[in-house]
Image (cartoon, rainbow, N blue to C red):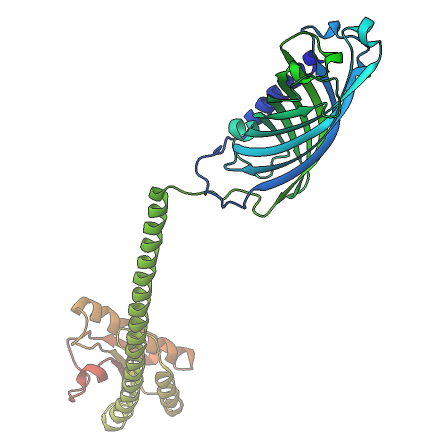
Length: 401
């Protein structure tokens, strides 16, 4: 039985190590907030089988193996201090079943020995230690060692003078996490005490007796059940500095948005002013066209926008009026292109006056004036069509005589 339990213990611990190595190792116990006194408590109850081993060799025990299996029941309360370390107070009660080593004197029968064992244990969560703390871990292997007091055969008058002894215990607690509150536990335990506390009928003459037990139970965790990570001060300071930096960046962005909004308002005002200026300019050009047409000695004048050689609506209307008046005549027509001396280079103005003259000539031809009647000239900015105070505007034109 001892070999079976020992093999099971070794296999369980090896499986725990192998399972833990498959995962990234988080922190085991350092770096977690210290819990309050009533946090991380659990209570448990269980029951199962126990056996008393008196001889040095299990095969030397009198009687059949299963005849010597008794029962065990237990209750306990555990306080976990950190994810790896806990303390437990446990009470075990049960009954041993043994044959006498001196059967000629006591007979070949089973003697039942009740016992009560109260002990305190130190628990080490091997899974958290090896694999790091994980609140959602399904299986945990918890080893423990403890010390307590055992009382036996208090109803048996045949016992010696020692009905109780101090005892040492150790074992492996296998915890299966099924809900946030509940665990199923398989407890494999051994405890050792002096044999003199047993009834005389079953003593073997050895100094110590060993008890082996295997129990199944449930445990309930209440109040705070998990551990809250705690960060080193240097990390906290880093987070605070990062937050302050982000706040400063937000303030800077707010200020930039205010400046951008003011710039947009300024641009909108400039755009509105420019729109008004363009409208005034177009109005002045229209008035100057009408004035020049009425006051000039030429037959017709077509005005152009600064830097342009395409007809405006006013220009086409003026040409249409001129063409309607010339249809009944057969006189020659002289088209002369001009440019504004105040803007542009001489070469550019020469080209611009040519393009304007050719544009008007093309329009006349498209609208019924024969090419033979038209003479096309251009003078760039070397000559002015008009010498009024508004010369820069009115000299952007083509005259038709």
